[in-house]
Image 1 (cartoon, helix red, strand yellow):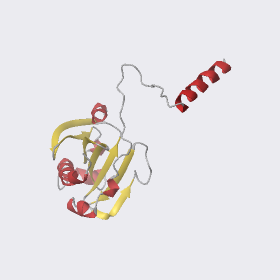
Image 2 (cartoon, rainbow, N blue to C red):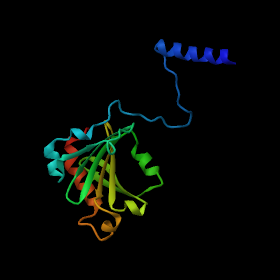
Image 3 (cartoon, rainbow, N blue to C red):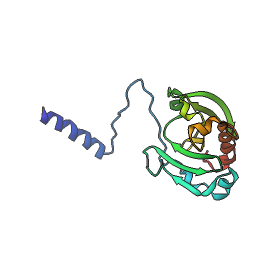
Image 4 (cartoon, helix red, strand yellow):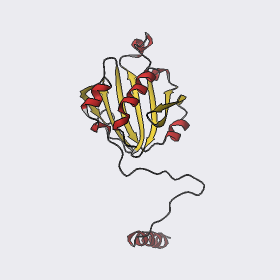
Length: 177
């Protein structure tokens, strides 16, 4: 049995070394196309960050300093909220299929079709996401209120979805097609 397994592995490695590829797709399932390089939102220029009302000096890359495979993330701080911009290999369709995402609304960002959405969790009601595909991954923009949940319940200066849409429109010229 072990000899047969070794023979199969050697044949597969030999085929790959010879320039052949092995199709690992499952019949009947869509193949996900992942861009070679995801867009790095930390490269947004300071003037773009000032235009969306965040402090460029507050740049926080990754997820609280932790790199996550399939994501390029950067966040900034504004007066009462945080803005997070991420590029990911997660498609818009995958975001739509996640049971925790709800309240999808079609919006337009420049010439792009995008979707604004929220989370079903009460603890996340003071945030809003917006997603659309680009040439370098799906772009996800999030506005989330600062403070505790109690502070959030007392009212926000503005709907996070309005902040997210305004941010996406302002940053659109800097995002790859």
